[in-house]
Length: 353
Image 1 (cartoon, rainbow, N blue to C red):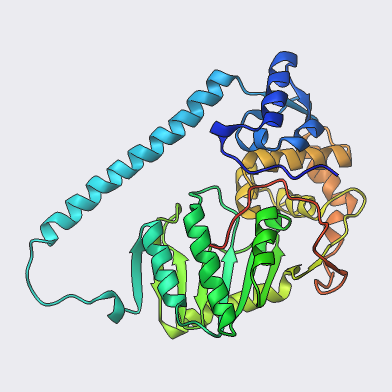
Image 2 (tube, rainbow, N blue to C red):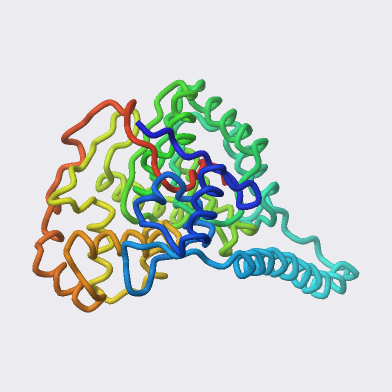
């Protein structure tokens, strides 16, 4: 059995990835199946599907890849500096004003939280007295990863809730179903904790004791809303419960929907979005994967169905009947213990704010 591919950053390219990328540069490309042992090359944009041969991965020139990655870093820094200047311009004159006392965060039903650390602190404070139930939705995201210290904080606060007799339920996307670090996390936690997965989930959500909710307020998760309005929190709880009923169990017992005719469940989800006319970028976003990974799955789907073009692929999907498979599958059936499941080929996401 192949060992799980460890998660790493692009500046710490793994040995398998370096070897395969060098080989692709020398030979002009590699078969797509060879990238299974180094999926990081696709995630980092160092390999991409060939235009004429969907089963062939071509290397991106190192100088192109280097400047693209460097430009991403520079853009993030520039965005933060612009945001800092805009905030200073807005608040500097306001801070010189005197008048009636303003409301404090404790007195408002909806509060805006700024910064990852401030958001995590607010979640930790809200969970300090929680003893009933924590509901979370954790979509896959390529945005800012939490530090090991924040992961440790999240693990500690979750265990504290479980020790007080509380319950934790979490929804993930199928792309994170076999993520090794997520399973390792659940093996550490002791108590009433469950996880399920869906093809698509909503944006990130925390609901604490059905009284307080946290949701993102911008795309990169540096802003969040803390909500204490009962009607809104109740709406989030109802949405979560409906999604939970539709989801496939992952932990502590995992239901494994079988693939049919060589088509995996993930490829079925992609096929459904393809025939609706969605672009590769939209498909990737809705299913929680980056666009390069989505295109590799599309290429594998095309190869399985014998398609030679994008237009023909849509036609073959309609004729194949694969979208009719598993529509009435009961997620509680076919349960099996999770140990021994194969590792996922996508980055893990931890249940942090």
